[in-house]
Image 1: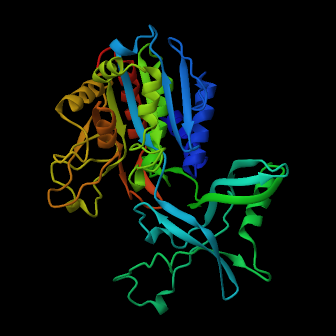
Image 2: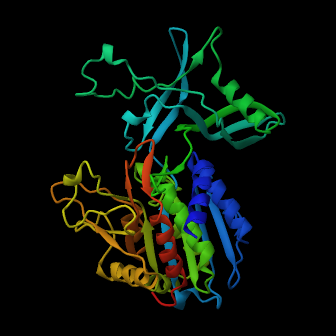
Image 3: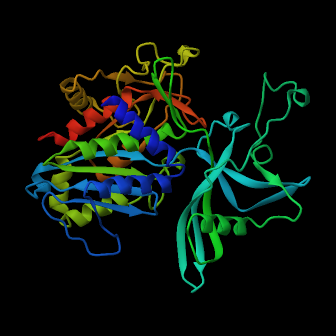
Length: 428
């Protein structure tokens, strides 16, 4: 079971270089399992035991199953949340740079990127492109160059003797990737139109705009002497998206169950498609238009926010509280913070421990050192937005926000089993 899980996980990660592609991959798996799309612009009809999904901005998705008896109010919803975005380098709107005969693209830093690992990597380019076709209609399509098309070369040590002691990276001047050399200066939008046509998108009259990011072409892999680890870009937080998706598909439940994967968590979640936006709240309003009934349903519901945790790095163990340092492949992690940077409390934590014990999965705890700042997740945001009991959990990983991250080959499958049991739980 575990190896099959990791094989499918690696395939999912490789096919998901951007949030748009991740949602596309999730849609394919949901449709194969019988989930039906509900368009936000249309009237909705749902049935008892019906399975549905909706997408916003092509980068956020909610999938849900109605309870077998159709009673959301008394049964509540078992909800799992994650996010589809990862820190990266995004292409600027007017990106073309031409210096010394080299063609480069200007980039913006999206989220809290660990910048050093981006140098000297084979990079490709993917995202969403909006264009006008020959009939004057506005269209959009996903694009992925797949092959290496760019590189951010380091400055040689001979010209930067202090590089190994102290290296401050100027994001404006150091990061523009090199895409090639030129005789005539290339038109970036024409390059995008040509790539779309190569991918089978016909009738592209003019590319009008785009949302693109660079990504590392080194494929995800299971690594370690005994395959103990999974190494990949975007483990934070596509790993949790996949875990939640598999848990929902494997649950075979009669209960009300929901998975929400929002975009824009890495930049604060404040967008129409982000967790601090109205997407989930609006969906719940459509399912239960009457406020009193909806509030009763939420009081009987629980949200588990799944986002990776910092595993204890063997070279930097002092960065962790001595009693709260999660180890890779030793089980999922309950994340706690007295200042509500995580939404866990004793009741929701106890529920998770209870579920994990039934699956014979060990559980760990993470509390940041008291003298260090704590990150956050969609957990507190969702709890505040809709007033639902919430728990923050995740699997431990190394290199969070690096271009390539590392997690355990056992942890993801184990967490998915616990979440699948959560989806089946009769009472929460």
